[in-house]
Length: 244
Image 1 (spheres, one colour):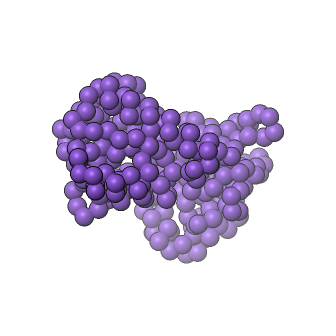
Image 2 (image 1 turned 135 degrees about the vertical axis):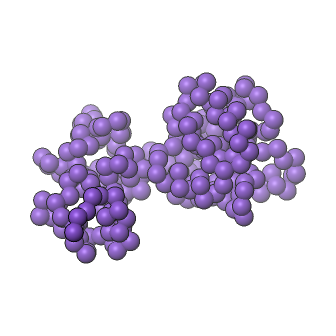
Image 3 (image 1 turned 180 degrees about the vertical axis):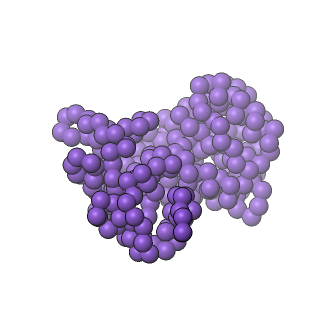
């Protein structure tokens, strides 16, 4: 399970990382401010975020918590040395799944992480979060498992050509056939490896290895024209080798 640590004190962050890795988690990513955390969150899938309330810069851990709740929908807990009731009350408005007080000990870190995960699951089951319990996909390593009736069908990620969004449903166009699943494009792109998949449009994700050609308004995959925005086109071209 990947855990992001957002803490501007490097010594505290490394200590926390050491403890979390000792529990068997993967806490290999540390950010010291809001913008650094956003960049990491948007390029890797995380299952929990530990957020210091006070961060370097204008934006705080509370601002980051609000971003996570709105865009990523993963559990988070606050790390704080505050005994100021006003600050704590402001943090509570973001509905954290647990609090971890500084200075922390091994057992308090372990308890806070377990509590955050448990509270998140309970909130999801109670319908108090926007967590997608109905999603029909599970991604592990190089394969995607989609739910069909009473079983999960394995699809190799390399076989996916592109994915098209239709509200809360996705069409997975593969080498062999098309699958329709209940899932959002936002949730899907967070699960896919960024080295091989790229969101070219609000309604499309493509497999970079399946690209046939790129023009000014389309990415072409096997004669299928997929729209691409100008900003996404520039980013895409920066990620593939081009020659003129």
